[in-house]
Length: 260
Image (cartoon, rainbow, N blue to C red; front, side):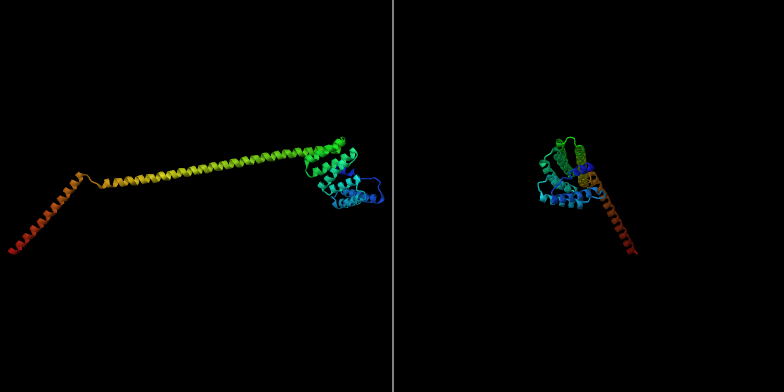
């Protein structure tokens, strides 16, 4: 595409005979322009800028010359000032008199817009150029190129949107899983709290049961009480008998001692 665009631009270099001073400025401008074009090792924006200066000098002498103005727009384009060049080519497309010149202006307008990635605008400009010159192969090629670029861009935009939607769905599923996990954790915590609560309640019931059983364990039956009392009385009786025997034995020893 770049080679076709360059060829379209070179066609505009003027060789018309002008007044002496004006012709000198344009001749110098064309010379600088061609030197920059022929230098394939680099983009010599300095020479294109100098060519622009020469074209402006010629236009100061004759502002209404559309051919010089066209060459000025070419020099702007070569300096990658695409927006400024597009403005001039658009004006020239309306002002040029012959269909061929109009076609060239609209062709280069399309080029300037294409370099700014204004695909819809460039496609429309190429179509305007073909309405003026339907047989122009360069314009047909550039139109097809711009249309292909638009198609690829639309496909890429669609793919990007699908990927974006997929990422949104993934994030949504991830958040849902996180919510479910949080819910499960909450349910587990609630269950654990319930288990702890039941454990505390069971311990409380057990303590209450033991407290209720304690008096019953300390309380004895009537029969057991009578048996215990009888045993105590028997023990008391034995103790008293022992005491009596000990007193009697003591009294006997005392009497015996006195008799001696």
